[in-house]
Amino acid sequence: MGAVSRRTMIATVGAGVFALPRVAFGQTPVVRVGLAFPRGQYFFDPAGIWIAPGGTVRWEFAFNGGVGALMGVSVTAFHPANENHELRIPEAAKPFDSGPMNRAANGFIRFEHVFDVEGTYDYFSITHESIGMVGRVVVGRPGGPAEQPPGYGARDGRAPMFPASAAILNACPSQQIVEKKSIPYPKDLVVRPYPYGESR
Image (cartoon, rainbow, N blue to C red):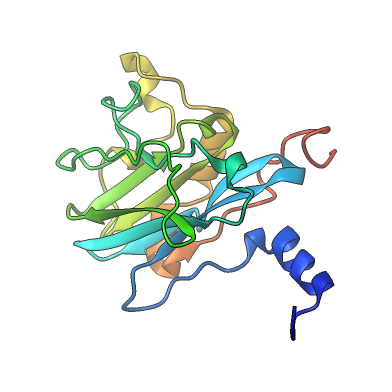
């Protein structure tokens, strides 16, 4: 393995799933699609990210032979057109949906979306929404239906908001995203109980 020891590599893979995201000024921000199997967590990291209007966000995960556990993950806007979810993107924006992210290209599985309409966008993974696999993008200034409390659409007959997903979205206040530019996935906020994760 050259200069990197086997022990270092294992520690990096095992614990590094929550490492700092690759977001640099002037570059396309990348949201890592991740899995912490011992904790029973599937996540987007950072969970909250800011971009300027017209900017692009890329979601990706590395194809390392263990991608099967993440197959079926999607990047899907909270929108009635997507499985009757409540509207949590600007009203003038078109809903997006990556579909299952199952195809690898050049060692990565990725999805990109251009955000032209200013406001707040919440999204989820169809396969793991129930355990809190959601995220938020603020484009320019916060605004729109996503600024309402998660679950507000229930009164209109929309799909229910899962408690774990609401917890993650509530941990990513839009104004804080604007100030910090990104909010890491709050890994200790939602932990599945034993035997899937750490006991409490």
